[in-house]
Amino acid sequence: MKLPPFVTRLAGPASTAGTIEATTSDRNPVEVRHPRGCQETVIPSCAGIRRSPRRCAYRMRADLRELLLPTLEWSPTAVLTLAAIRLLVEIIAETGALRYAQERLRFGGCQSRRLRPRMRPPREPSCGEWPYGTFLQRLTPPVRTILLGLGVRRQVPAGQIVIHQGIRESHLVLLEEGLTKVTATLPDGRSALLSLRVGGDLVGEMSALNDQPRSATVTTCGPAKYSVIQPDRFKRFLKENPDAALELAAMVSDRLRWSNRRRIDFTSYPVKLRVARVVAELCRTHGQQRLDGIVIDVRLTQPDLATICGASETSIQKVLRELRTEGLVDTDYRRMTVRDLTRLRRLGKLESNED
Image 1 (tube, rainbow, N blue to C red):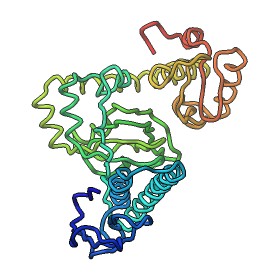
Image 2 (cartoon, rainbow, N blue to C red):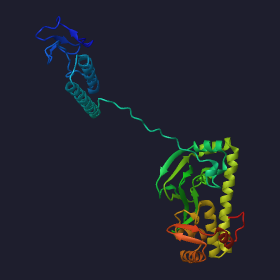
Image 3 (cartoon, rainbow, N blue to C red):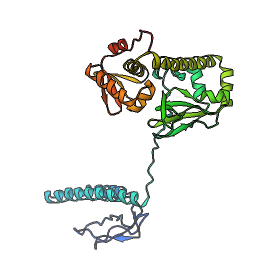
Image 4 (tube, rainbow, N blue to C red):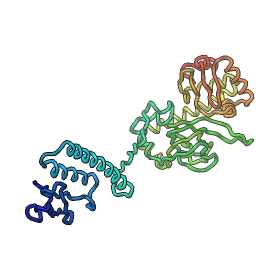
């Protein structure tokens, strides 16, 4: 019978005793006796060979095919036995391969490739995504990109003071995400809410341009991201981009006009009209359109609303109760929903181009 190519016959033709010696390139000589006493064959064992169980099982299956199939006539029982042996060998091979893989993973023999997640750079909102009237919304995309690259980015939690009133410092704060409130301390110790600032707004520009102490305190109302820009870099930016300087002047002019309007409202209109005008403006700057109305998703307390409107907290509570009864607004915990903006603007005597 033809032996496998990896078996080298060391003895001559098979003797009558039915004993031969053979060797492999991986094992010492072994001696095997055939159950029929005819010509002997050698089936090398895989024990002790540094191979994976799957490769070892493959060699065993190849040996069975080469050594057993070319034999002479086999009885049906022998054929079934051979099939059972082959099935058993395959089951053992699969089990051994599984254990082998587990051991390699356990002891670090198999170094798997670790895929690191790719970090996407922060996406810059388009011009339409920045709130209306903010400084970033006023700039063109190329100039906006330059401005966003001037400062050092920071991320702070709610309640963080980014600008302190009375401190002599000149850096600017460019808000990118989040909501902040601008407050000032009154002589009697109370805190007055002056305005609200959102992502895209620029704060601290007055001290950066005139080198005077801060006139107000800016505090985050929630988690916020902003950039700190040094005044010399900002001034150089304005010289290289004259259009940005014009937009900065327009922004300061709008804020001054808003402050003057509030002073006129304090002396010319009753509390109810003042509240209607302030709420209508908050709808424009911080409102989100929903199915049930415009939601002013700003953590604005009644004392904050009272300081903006220049009224007492008791008067604000009375006015909000009347507006709820008339179906104009609906108040929740630090949130307000405007049900009918048209009627609210009419109540505040606001024109179509004024808010």
